[in-house]
Length: 333
Image (cartoon, rainbow, N blue to C red; front, side, top):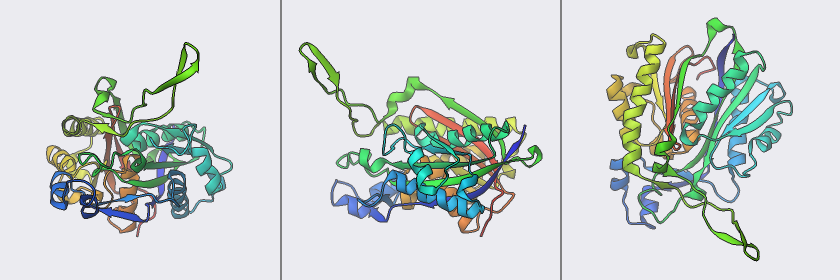
């Protein structure tokens, strides 16, 4: 059984920046109200020249460049997204845009846990020797599914993409030291992007369902309680599984949903605040993109160094949550 090596990262965000003050011109809210409850100051929203596919492709191309790979050497592209441009899948279009003609490409949907689930999934193809190189992309354009007149939810979400290039390596150099993944559909109604139930006549006496989706619906209080309970618990289980002390963790990299969740998780794990990576003030919740986007920023500015240990957790709709213990081995600034 082989290991995997994290070789390069990339990211892409829309040009349009929407601040809290901008939103207060549309809904009854304020910069102070949003910051104190979420830690978010601004978010990015895709304009008419940008799409989920274009952002994902740009992030993927940057990850390939930073890994020093030619696109033709990639065997697998996994696109973690809940907001594809095409319900049949956007990964094949990303494959074409980046010129990775030899790669099989498909979407994986697990909402805000999607990147972590996709990273673990891609790793299994590499561990068995079936494939050698993979590109894992997390990207979401949730701005098109937000009710921009609902002040409770519209302040939370933004668009973006992040990517990591991984390759098979000798087991002794494994960069995925352990993982745990969980789902609980019984609690799934807390956070949804559900189909609409509109029906139309097909033939006399017969009807069919029209395609369409309602805006994002969430019970913020229940999602918060879920996250602050389950995220520290699964990370503690993972550390125990891998015989890793919390003190040896260089960085805590969580899904960027709410600063209070990040702070609570770090406190329960006994991890110092200066080891918690956070950029949600600038981007909000970009769903499957948050972890790779934050990873790329911390690699690019030199915070994350080669050989450092990263405890990561994704959590969100489904409900789904997971954790992975990673060692970075790619280039750093």
